[in-house]
Amino acid sequence: MGDTKGSVRILRDMRESGTQPVDTQYAMVMRAAANAFRTPDVFAVGEEMRRAGVEDYSGFFNSLLRCLGRSGQIEYAYSVYLEMTERRVEPQGPGSAALVVGLAQIGEVDTSLQVMKATLGRGTTLGQDVFMGLLHEAGIHMHHTAYVFAFRQLADVFGAQLPEGDSLAGLDVAARAGDVALAGEIVERLRMANTPLEEKHFEPLLAAVLARKQWMPAMRVLHMMRQAGYGKAAATLRPLERAVANAEEPEQLAETVFGVVADSRDEQTLAVDHVTLDALVAGLAQAGCVEAAASRLNTWYTQLGIVRSTSSYECVIEGCMARRNKTVAERMLAQLIDERLQPSQRIYEAMIHIALVQPNYEDAFVYLEAMKAHAMVPAWRTLAAIVRRCARVRDVRAQTALREMRRLGLVVTPVLASYAQNAGRSPRNM
Image (tube, rainbow, N blue to C red; front, side):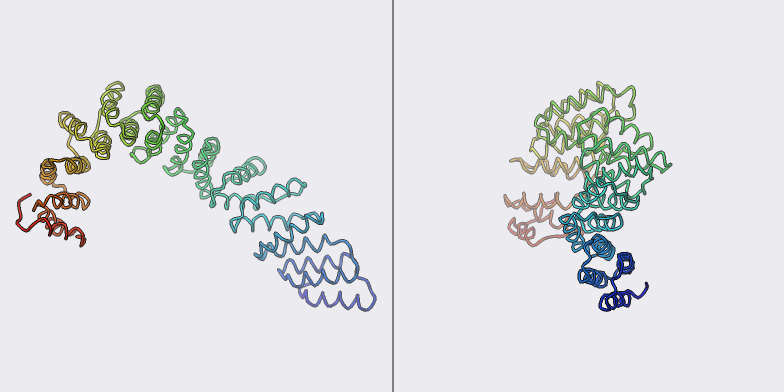
């Protein structure tokens, strides 16, 4: 049956000579043509069946569906599937499997899931590779419903172990949907498979529980991460920071989360540290509640016996920069120095920006000199702000700042150069 064209000719010659081919002969030729992805030969057999008056077209449609699906003609295959549904011709497993995987691969994950459910509803069995194919594409396209359906089939029916890549995609899907149960089960399966757990495995789970505002589970996940040596960077708790900053009542939410943190200190000890409190304080500061953030910076840390760090103060002072709140910023800076902490470059630059928006901006140069005394190089953004502010009042220090930018190899835009030119030409020391 390798030469399907010749087989079609034999069927035609039999019909024309008055010998009616039997159904099995039609089926053999169609199956051979479908296996060889020869769609025209499948159609030719269908035409022979029509001319011979054969009424059972199920074999033709299933062969055509399988051939189109496996040769990548997915849109055409789906139209054949719809016609089969209208004619009440039951799609068989191989054709449905090819269609499910093909639809998922072209991004039609919803339709692929519908075809899969309809196929299973008819009692047709699909292989593990079909579910794995849908799961893989659902992970790529971040389709939560399809991923969960395929995951449950693979886990409960086949007991399959997922590849690490598909597991990581599932964690991202769970994080976006806030599906804590799915994320937790994937992490547990990775652990049971002796996969070395890394930060990339935990972070989506933490994001999922934070998205659902499940604060105590979040503390447990954070404790687990830190047991494994991860989750110590501020970036890990950015979702918590954003949750507080975007809340309708930031202070109320922050107090609620702090209560959970305080209750966790005996069991989830590793989750209770200045990084966690910094995220809450930063969220308050970003929400504009800088007075509340400054107050909590004192009370929360003292209550839990946690030592404040420079990064703790950065959160509040950068919030003051957004609100142009010089009073709180200066109070926080004085407190930081009293605690014998060294201001960071971020703090100095925030103080410069706060000073530059005041009527009297001389303090900006005090902080700039303090930066230089500690061998800190001002960022482009900071020096450009000095140029613009000085140029606004024709302060010739705009030209000095511009020369400093050139000395440091920073880009001087034509607009900045024109600002400095308008400020005069007599240089003064900064």
